[in-house]
Length: 250
Image (cartoon, rainbow, N blue to C red; front, side):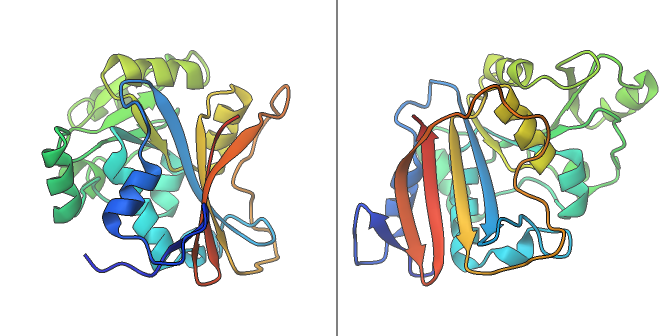
């Protein structure tokens, strides 16, 4: 697997990190403990998207870390709007990542969990039709029964809230299924709801060396939390002018 040159700034390291070293840098100490990790990319001026999607802000190094975070996860949690906007396909890892997971006693691929209150999801999407593992759809008790019944043909559907999806119930439901390493890839509204619920254990934030201006959204949106949650810098990596940070609960 060819990867771009990424070096460590905290702690300082001049030589590029190998894939194994990057995996070690992002691995949690105890996989049996439930961990909610969020991954985002942002511009220097705080924008989360370019032309409505995040892809224009990343690069090879960001994609490498993106893939490693999936490799380490039990479940990848994404809001339905982000699935549509970013053009998600089936949650299938590459051969090297799948082999690594097999060597470490993990299923070949993580579960794909989609958060949707409306259940306006395309059952013909590759997300469902080509999924290597049966996806999970997280919704509310008030979701349309007919849509839920249709989705249950291609995915497991669970309710985690009455009118709105509740982050604490999502985390508990996933954990009860043995999916304790939770990777949330957004979008901003889902991230914001987890911040408000104080349900974020880690943030992996890529800082792109770009200014986007305009009306680009932030990485989080929604109600403010009762008090700011202090986070601690675990590491800071560099790939040319792009920075890759990992923050954990303080």
